[in-house]
Length: 336
Image (cartoon, rainbow, N blue to C red; front, top):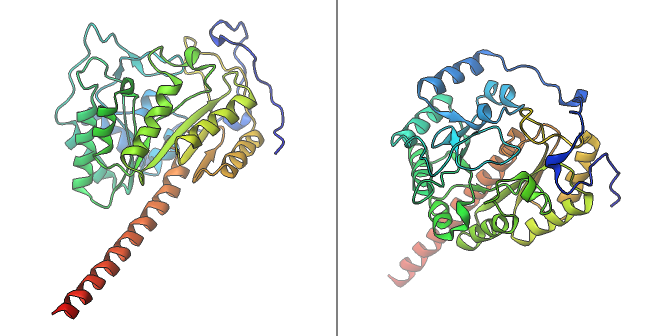
């Protein structure tokens, strides 16, 4: 399939670009958050002192998602021990110590989810390299708590890399989230310039592979930002690498510079180009692809699709278990 060319940089170190900030095209302009539901959710989260990645990362879809009763909860505070150059979440020094984790946060998150009447929730966290287990147990306990409150709730988690510690990764996967997401963020060449030095391209790929080894039927998911100077062939290779480790779902979104201190946008990708990437990724065997300028890793379109897939599989499992139980009963009756 031919992929149309777009304005992109060939820079190896995008930190040093001298370009003036590019003007946002019309397709990236969104309305300011508003609506009664948005206000109620904002107030409730504030009262419970819960953080959302929607706020911390200045997500352009916050108004749409909150007005529709959806939010992505961010665990373990508002300060991250990593300093990724695209991310607007506050950075703290692990050696100096970060604020302690709220031990009641899992219950508060579960309460908020119940109040919002969600059927599908995304839970993520800051990196906590300052903690002995990097926060994996707190994360796992939150997943178990929200699923215990509502067994029908579909839970997607978006996790740190845990420095590649597969014991911690398995501990979190064993909490049985329905979707285990970890973002590769960008192509391999740009990873050192875009992500924190402790975040490695191959380490992230291995994390996704390990989840599949621990739980082969668990859905895995990753996300790629575009507009940072990546080349077409590098994106294709990243998609191949994701499929090689069994990744089921991928999303593409436009990188947007949160503040002047963050990486500059090298290019704005057109909606047509995003459609081409979606078509290509689907042809490579991804179960689902969300691709568009305003798409983020937990974008609602992907949630709705995954909700349908998971619900269908749950019903099939119930039917299969019922058939197995009936067959076992017949065998017992024959023996009797």
